[in-house]
Image (cartoon, rainbow over the protein chains, first blue to last red):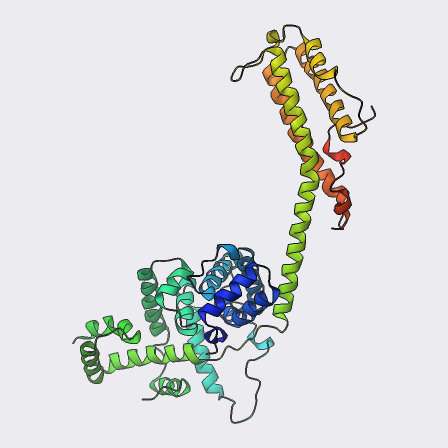
Length: 205
Length: 221
């Protein structure tokens, strides 16, 4: 997982926020560049529509910078940004009811455009991964958000609790239920498919 | 360890929160029980796929540029609104001050105390007293706003007199005029918005000058 903010220290991020508050355009751009891909990926995984995800992403940034004065530097900027993004996302999902229905992946640029035989994954592999992601799509929005933040963004349960504005115990409960549901949804995979997935994920054993 | 106990430990195991002793115990159960082994393997593999799979979509190029442009536009729109607010609020505040001063003067003249309802009988000397209080010392001024407000004040007195003749209570007549004033102020805001047009630069020169829309019933004097 690429996390551009991983290289940005908390202290430097505080400086950026301070400069952004005083209207420094360069600092605003740097904050946007540091977080936009992660936020977009999260929102796209939540809503599964490229156009909506980009709009929500933009809306989240606009809201975040409009109320930057209220941001407390004791938290990570990403936690705050994801909190706003999640709220905007939920509102959009409620109003449009587009939970995983309009999958426009095929018309969009792929992250990996290298079609060489060496890097091209087999159709089987792609199908198996899709099976996993489709199972994620079938989780409830809050379970999906919990899973995405935990696994893809590597947020701790405490950070997820802040983003979702829930108690930590509730977040753990959502994570538990999400795993249970995923297990049920993927139960039909054969041992061979499971083995294949294991190889794909690079897991040994 | 039974399967139920083992499955209760799955989350803690996946999150690395199991004590070494419990982890050993779960590991032993895993070796013995094919169902639990498969269930745990499924969770582990799913977790790894979720962590490592590449995102199939990317944010379109130029997102940051578009976002910054949008921020600039919003900032400009906000500045424009503030200017427009000042443009409208200035004359309206002046109008409100004059009206309040007028009403204060009226209350003193008719002897209405705070908390008491104004009645026609409290006028004593009648409308001429009010006109004396407001009308006599009006200096000649060139300022259109002052002239319009003065005109509004005179119309106010006329209407008050009409209300009196129609038998309406003084308090109700006053309340009605305040509501009228609110309507007029809202209309002034709307007409100001129309007048202002789409050019943000338009209001700069107009910000300090009064405009006709802010004052009710403006007409020839």
